[in-house]
Length: 335
Image (cartoon, rainbow, N blue to C red; front, side, top):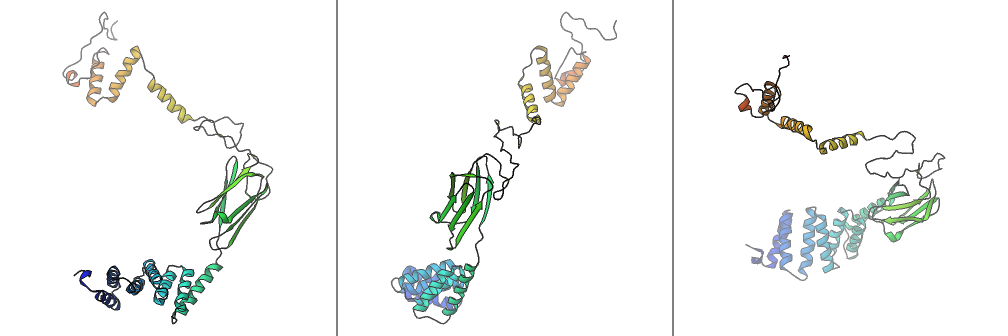
């Protein structure tokens, strides 16, 4: 039987009956069918009651949504305000929870509402006492010193930064309305007019232009007399420069040199007898065991005058000497 076979009162009755039986999933189902079917003032109770069932199932975000819809349909419905307050409390939205409980109390409900108001106020008070820790870090390039302030969700309009030749002063209003300040007494001078900052969703990036291309030993404090110049970038990306200027001999990249020699050897094309030997070496090196046996046997038995790769042919009998035309073959022991 579908929901259309029930009259509106049956749907509400089934939903309430399931709720009493603590079958909250079934109750949500029938309240949902009722919301699809009914209209007008009946929807207020349906949304408020479904919010109650969703609270029992700990589906707090959905419960808050239903309670909010009920309060929009009837702003004086204290049950809806109450259930919205409980939902917000469990969602750790304590400011919104307090407002909902106060609305509930204003519209005639009391009982346990006062306790919820107290709990909400305590949570809000504790949160305000916990200071928000804002961390910052820094790094440098050849031309800039960059400071990263790890503060989330700042309003760009609520962030100001003042630069002088020796200081950086940042002020910001945090999302919880507390004030944040970061004042730096810089180790080395900067160029204020060429320094800037950017407010992002998760951080603030501050870029300060160096007066001199030197490596800062620290962000704050007294400058060191022994300051090293930041090395200029290498002309070739494959060759890394020394960390600091040095009189020592430049190191060679032997791996690179070896690979270049191998490449040159592979690209070099031999000619004449060298080319023929290179071909025989290639055949022997890449050939099968039978090819190598055939080449060894034919070369040895023919006194170097025959080089065959056909093992089936040379395996049958001894390979005879076949000197080139016009050449007489002599054994080494012949005088």
